Length: 457
Image (cartoon, rainbow, N blue to C red; front, top):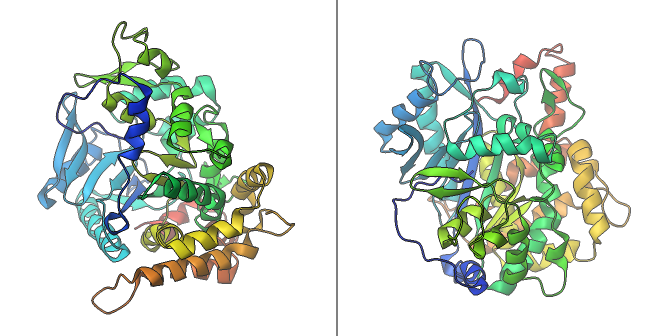
């Protein structure tokens, strides 16, 4: 989740809705300036007993952040605590229960993205060895209850933790017990954004299935392959979901702005502190009628913050975020951006991907989304088939898109090899969670703690 880390500055006051729409248009870039921003989260655990370290305990999260300063990372402070780090590889931030996230720099190629991931994991593993902590690549804590988890000292999280139980039964699980991999991608124009948004939404369940990696809750199978994805179904209906309006005629920046205005607020950030505005209306804020800041109108920074509090399967800011995947190991961190760059960054691939999904109805897209957390690649698609029936075709399209991009490493390889872990999943017919469940019911003898050996970095 977003961390306010920029130095104080004067942000323009919003005087008209045209500024809201213009904020999305400001993200438009020519194709040669398109970049790849990869985000990935991992669970932190103590090697001795697998507990989740608190912020202040010896060898805990504060100490971990401090260890990373030797690699050039600089602390971002809030209330006297380092709550994030900034550096040449982007930013490191803390999710609510100490999940450790790298939000990578905008990079030109997947080769650069994977190298960035490798540097980050080498650094945190070296720090972890010194502190006696490890890092787990899953979509959900396999064995922790909510009460066993610490809370990080970030103001926005205190507000969200209070608000979540008012609007859904699993919002606290989303905050405290899940991890994801995401990729942020650019667009050239409003029309380009619309097509990428539609393909991204329609095929997001495919990413959820291929990366499904959260089959355990509190030490036992939970009946799902991606429980992380299931959690979003009852987190907060006002700010989640498949956004059917994206497929309606006339969709564009203005329609997304209207959607975002209807998303209830969480907070306003002023002078280094978060003011609780949970449940209030940004529309009232535009009129200077926000009860917690009477007479004050929002700035563009407030709008940017507000956009970060909507959590649909694909999210628009000044770029598009693909949000459907569970956390996982190193090779799948590189595979997630490979899937979406391959599908969305080459026009031929984008057109072919749209041809796969353009005839799906709203109900068919929603049915697929609802079924994927439990069924994975066996979830039903339009026409009576299953998701696995088009998975290989989608990967072929992505591979062709990556080949057409012609980004090579020093060995002369293009980017299509980063799809290999996903090709193996399709070939085997088993998503990652199914592999873990087989081991749980087999060689692990029902001992979920074995997942720490299986899925740690």
